Image 1 (tube, rainbow, N blue to C red):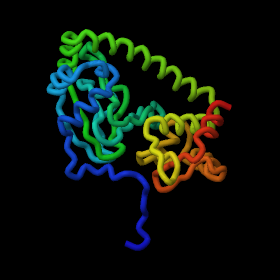
Image 2 (cartoon, rainbow, N blue to C red; image 1 turned 60 degrees about the vertical axis):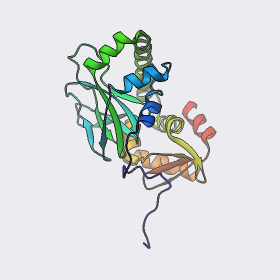
Image 3 (cartoon, rainbow, N blue to C red; image 1 turned 45 degrees about the vertical axis):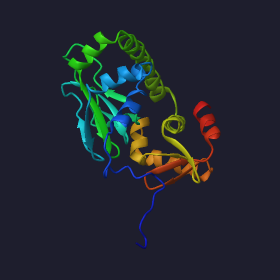
Amino acid sequence: MAGRKTTPLKDFSLGTHRCSVDLRLEKLSMVPFFTDLDEGKLTAINQQFSAAHHHADETIYHQDERATMLRVVVHGAVKLVRHTMDGKDVLLDMLQPGDYFGNFSTTGKAIYSETARAQTDVCILSIRMSNFRSLLNDYPEVAVAVLDITADRLQSSREKIRHLTTLTVKKRIAHILVMLSEKFGEQNAYGLLLQLPLSRKDLADMVGTSSETASRIMSDFQDQDIIKTGRQWVAISDINRLADIAKE
């Protein structure tokens, strides 16, 4: 159709997509605390998870709801958003297949500290925390890995707070783009294309600024041939320059 907008991004629609056993095992093996398990153990653990599909922009769970599930992304992308007291949204993270999210607590009294929303159509694996606690008892190596990963996440959270409070907005946006390129980057004719829909508001929410400021900085980056952009997509033309800006 003439005049129809095109995008270099993949088609993330679910269509006939299903979370096949092979795909489930592949993505579960990418979860940090399952990485060292053999196929037999992964197969047994997979049976504890249930699959669910969500369409783009659909909420998976809400902040402050009782946290009962641990989840793993199998297909598509998920974003985690925290709602602040002054009514703003802070975009905490973008998740790709193999990433986990939800509740890690074993107390049974935890609440979700963020809202999880489908950035694209997604397939998600979920396990109830009561079942996950049983896994920790059955597989001590998983329990040890969970402890290590929890400590790493705490350090990462502290680093994010430092970025939001000490770096300029320009450096923050450069840092976020470099981080997203490591997770979602795919080399093609446009450059290092971030394979997920990414709006100016998404970027603004990740760095704690306004959409207008994020748009101005992204336009500056484009004028300097550091990035290419279109409707909800970003490709990085000069990753080294972007990394330098993040560190300047």
